[in-house]
Each structure stands twice: as structure tokens, then as C-alpha cells.
Image (cartoon, rainbow, N blue to C red; front, side):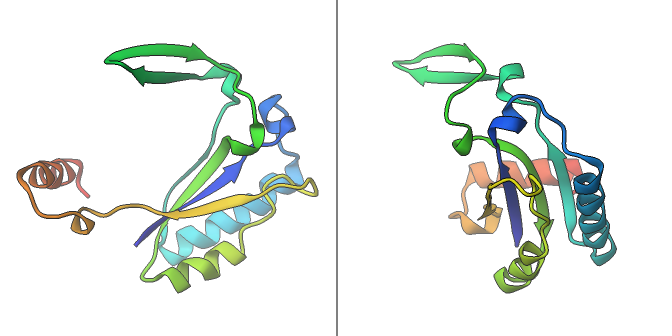
Amino acid sequence: MRLMIMVKSTKDSEAGVMPDEKLFAAMADYHEDLVKAGVLLDASGLHPTSKGLRVKYSGGKRTFLDGPFAESKELIAGYTIIQVKSWEEGMEWVKRFPPPHGDADCEIEVRRLFELDDFTPSESIDRFRDMETVLGK
């Protein structure tokens, strides 16, 4: 089971304010523990939305919208992806996740990633399995 731990943005993270060394150290400690346990798949912070874009699909057309985007509480500032044996094991790791914005009010969101076995077998799913093989997954 793969879980994504998403760090929600704050006004500071959207303004490009970098975390202090104490927070970097806490995150490094946590992620080193994930590596030692063999459950870390990926993790990274994201640049503010002012350096990104969105693509809106409507009526068969694509519209490109440059950032920044409003409502920072609904935006993602970073993520960690782990692979665990159960939801319960994942929650044990989530309980250890350091407060991502130090003492500032913030939240994280945890979501399960779909696995190919979650879908009805089909030719398209087989194509995705072939891609996983090529990627070494």
C-alpha cells in the first residue's frame, strides 16, 4: 500500500519563505527513519504556485493559467510517498511526521495511491503494467 502525505501550503510557503534549520533537521530525521525502515519512495517540497501553472480543460480546449493561485490552504507545499503493509502501519509513520511549518498552524493530508490491482483487468491496465516493468517497479 502506497500513501502520500501532503503538506498543505501556508501564506509563508506561498511567499517563498524557506523553513528554518530546526525544521529541516526534524524533517531530515523523520525521512532518514523512513529510509532505514525501507518505506520511503519519494519526498520533496514544491515551489510556490507563483512559479507554476494550471491547465484547465473545458469544451475540448486547454487553457493555461499562470500562478499564483488563491486559497493557499488548498494548495500543496510538499509531499512524502511511503509504501507500507497496512493503513495502520502508515498511520504510525504519519503520527511521527514533524509539524511541517514549525509552530504555525498548518495541516497535512494523507491519501492512498491507487494500485493497478485496484482496477478491473483490461488491456489498458496491462499497458500500465508493461510501463511499470520498463520503469523497474
